[in-house]
Length: 365
Image (cartoon, rainbow, N blue to C red):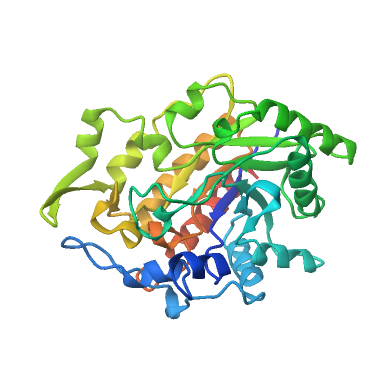
């Protein structure tokens, strides 16, 4: 039997262009770069602010930017982007323009899929940590709304570059368990996909917290959203091994060692009875968004250490014969989870991916 080398998919945040809603909610000109630029170090050795290589604070309203990023990713061994997709009741969309622009191209340099980020849009994005103010609620409607959503997605599903699994378009859902009639909705989507010539639809659940897995799911698979798929499963003793505490603004602040944490990540067992795809992360530090109220900050996440653990996760994925491995993320600059080139490490994270993939293809052919 031929060895399956999983497709490497990098999660992609399209929050790098101005939209009217963000202007209204957070001030004219707001994008994710607003938070990234205002970041400051919170403790000795804290690497902030993070600066894109060449100070390339790109604007996704420029339709040439995203295809160039796709080519760069492909050049370094990434197989696809997993774009966050923001869809609300009655077809209201957010941050959709850069992705919709891809439909104009006859061909694209990289494959892609969607992750429906089906959460309410709240004040927490700009750093108002704990705010319960909902700017746009997430309501799911009924069959007519579900059909409308499916037929919007269909233009993408029909693209040659849209990622398929066994002839089924692949879509991830961030919080499947939040959809009240999820079984009925996914059954409808599967039938509609078959009606237009696919083998159905392949739905993946984002595994972030244990409660999502302990409830019944109706999709086909899960994937680990790291570091939280591991973070929420560590014992108190394991947390203590990974972290150190320092004082920030007079309060205890947790800083996690990347390698110590990843040792636990690579030793977690795969879930039985479900197609469980693994994840990896380049780091995590959302202090640009919420300052000293950050839940967790990682340090010592050097590219060479990322490469070491990325190799482990790829090998585990091969052993499990998984279809995908998800990287968090291509460009989550406001959460310190990115592999795009920056001023500190250049292209080193991308080179790490290329090194591992080259080695595995030489080993397995």
